[in-house]
Length: 98
Image (cartoon, rainbow, N blue to C red):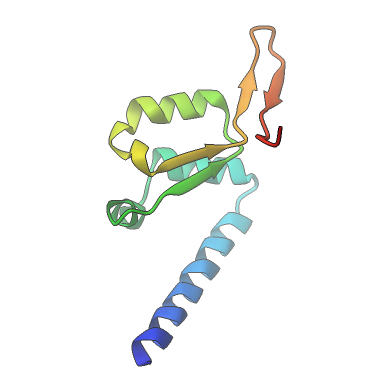
């Protein structure tokens, strides 16, 4: 029972820390991009244990950069609502709700 309580407390502290980190930035997309391209040691350890990170609202160019530079981590990445740019410069986001 003690280990369950400790685990719950540790998870709560972790979630609060992540929430504060997200709230302190001006743009959640910048936070997502930084986590994707500059992962912390803790994030890399979590991925080695099988954690999959969901990256929301990034630009297609950022996703392409990650796939080129973070190849060894691809199995731990999921991208949703990626913003695409047409050759004319128009932007659109696929919401996967169709």
